[in-house]
View 1 (cartoon, helix red, strand yellow):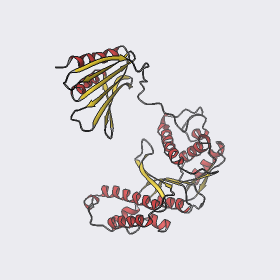
View 2: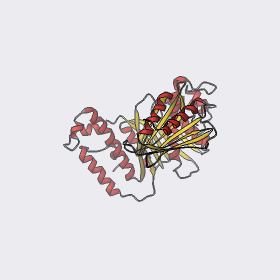
View 3: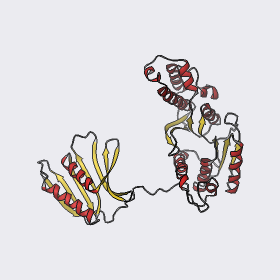
View 4: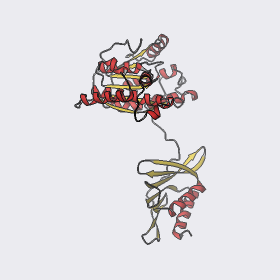
Length: 392
């Protein structure tokens, strides 16, 4: 039997939805059986032109969002109030209503002055301020991302999102760098230059920093194209050079970037950054072949050989070991490292991004070196290519 006060609370919800005065609902003081559940936050939203209620289930370490049709949502609220939630508040533009279950099991329902006078936005997707705006960017037009009026083509929406996601990641890292009169940035394996152009644009036109950005690319046709676009865009300190990562020489690098450099080309890039004492090194590796060959050749009997006997797991293990040792080598040379997932495009696989920021903290080189040796021994690795490239 549903208590009368809960019935009255449910009626108040339905009336607020009907009269368009509904703002939100909060359910709290949870005493039910769902482990780590703390609150439910409910708001109205529009999904595919249909009005729904969005439930955010707040757990100790995570949030889970579920969207319900209005009728089903009201039923879910009714269930929640009988299944562990002892406190609930309905916010409307006219009044707030508070439902509370007392220790004796009885319910109190009181109406108070509205704390929120305006209805919230119903947009399901928040409008995002992109660090790289589409309007007035000749390079985006030349790269076929926007039309002449700065409108992003439907087919290149993902590429435009990728560019902004990349800049958002770099923006937080760039804030940690020491101030310099001229920031020297080298993007190794710059390809068609989407991200290289965007970074130069962000540094010079958004952050107002004086920067020299160089894209290094093996394919001459792309180098010529990018230099042409750079000139058209009046990017006076953005240059593209033809050459390989391995053979590129520059001892004046503040920021080194290498995205999708295949296999040991990533190691060559890291080594170039370390040798130049770069303040920031950013890589997103791919094609982890070298370490996989080592693990396959010198098969070790260890605690995880039951996993690595399967090819697909061996491949994943080799990727993790390769990048983990890369991170340790960076730490050995005084870099504070982060390894995280980097989604470069909605239609491409997820990548791991490794970042290293030069630190002034004391380094226990012997301990790090021993960890590298122990990892290699455990997996049967004779040498990680990065060790050879940088000379340790």
